[in-house]
Length: 287
Image (cartoon, rainbow, N blue to C red; front, side, top):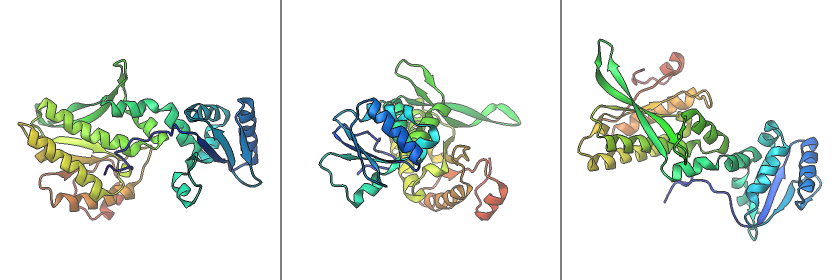
């Protein structure tokens, strides 16, 4: 079964239903009502309850774009929302569907990211890492993510990850980036060690998620005439968009346990404060 957290790409429902909106401030609710009336969208509201917007089949994206234009970024972030498909009971299961309205709007605006991942338009560039005393000799390659738009234009990694962060797809993109690096290294028949970057907070369960990535190493390696994956380095990145050094620490420990059963796969920690690193009581080397 595919993992909904990182394998199944999120899709907005096309069915008819109700969009429930719970803004934190009366001022925000007034703005929502004004925009809904302006675009002839029917809604109901109970006292101290959420707005329930009637959405026809295939209309959810257009409704979300209207709401995205009506509210400021903080208002979108602090307004809870959930879409209930017509005929679905509004019971406790609805709790799992509640997300900031900003995320739903970002999924509409960033639909191109879903298409980029689904259509296999991610690629890896391989930056050589050389010996300081012998710069013409390549020790390894660092895998750098890039995307391609439908017209072939290059998409920078910052654009990819910003869109993923806003739409709640960081887990999906990070996994796709790791697998893309493995696939491209196989295609190019690289024989050097590989440094594969990932964001620590984009890993739900380190033991499970990294094992899945290592399994991908092994599957690709069996098909390749060369095996750079026996010397692959998993490299957590401390990222300014989602900095969590304690998560890096936990991930370091979990990776050590995982690699005990997968000889040759290593982890390199980059850009983590020394105090945090020491608290891990880990022997993982810095880059």
